Length: 209
Image 1 (cartoon, rainbow, N blue to C red):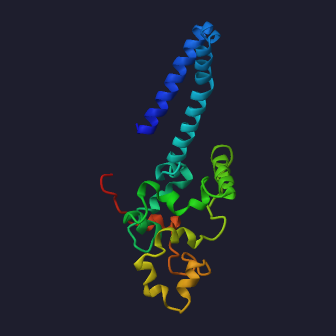
Image 2 (image 1 turned 120 degrees about the vertical axis):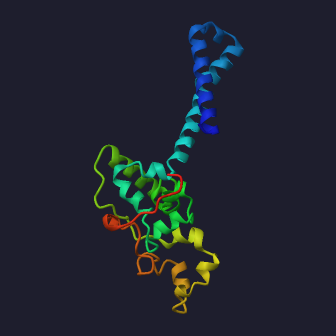
Image 3 (image 1 turned 45 degrees about the horizontal axis):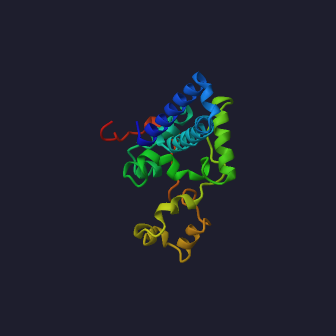
């Protein structure tokens, strides 16, 4: 149990105890101190616990395990372990180029509930489709993958800025940085999750698992 979870549980427990005490001894609220205690027990603590609970779940929903807990995402999780350097997500995941515990969130922040309004609405749509509707198959991006998500990490990195592959044309690097030339749509890094190829793939075993 994390430190934040321990604090949350403690706040909830104290709130329940105080509310129980007020229910058993309502006469306490006749005094000024009792009114303050009731205010804290019935309003402040529940609001505090609710806010902490939401924050805890938001942090949890950023984890790779959370993203892959949906059945429709299982193959995408497997693709992170493909033993083939041409698989872009796999090479990033296996070499810690993205944090493994937040791999999905790191590369797809524009599809989560923490970005702009449209991203939040899409995130809620995904929740609805999983629990109340039917997820579309095959899973597709709403729009072409934006280089912005790659540049969060690669912009300014020597390996990216000085790569010969990014300098084949005079303005090539500038076009990549302005999303005019897609990283995943021009044949350079076009092998992404490619879940249809998993049956023929060999897999890397993550140490300790």
